[in-house]
Image (cartoon, rainbow, N blue to C red; front, side, top):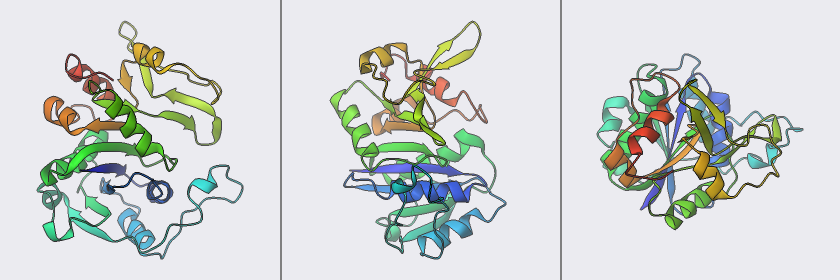
Length: 256
């Protein structure tokens, strides 16, 4: 069973192209990528197709410390198929099932949950996804990121959702969060675990998970069983708190 990577785009094709350059370097042996576009008005889908066809490169300055994650460019073309939302949510065209990249026009700005759910419905309808990685389009990833996330989930059968160590793009020696956040119910405020600490900081995994109320939405690996038992992201939230809601609904069924 393959892993699927779902990336949501809204007027951010330049970030998405850089993200895709890193994602397609992943060393996990079997994965495919779905990019859901929330009705961007900046020509995003045309730019993404130009990138896949080898007519456009990622815009990463030569002095960017993370440039090595996305350069030199991967081999093009990257075969792709494009769907409207209704077709995608039915699982798309079986004849195009092996293509590595799927581009979906959602038709409206559905928000974080709504846009990602279009991609999740596509994967569920296909029935061949053991894992789904929801990944923000303004991220870049190491080649081993997907493999390490899946290994962590396989080590712990009770876990349904796994997060990543996130570093600041413009300050990659500084932690944004160690996978997720704690949450103060009285103040309704999250606290990102490890925030603003050195990237060399080491906190044992069990200590991180003991403090974690939810996994950061920038990078969430979920299992097929999690999607079946907990369901999709709640579209009651247009932006923010979707991850907290997902974690709350998973309580008693899965660990983080």
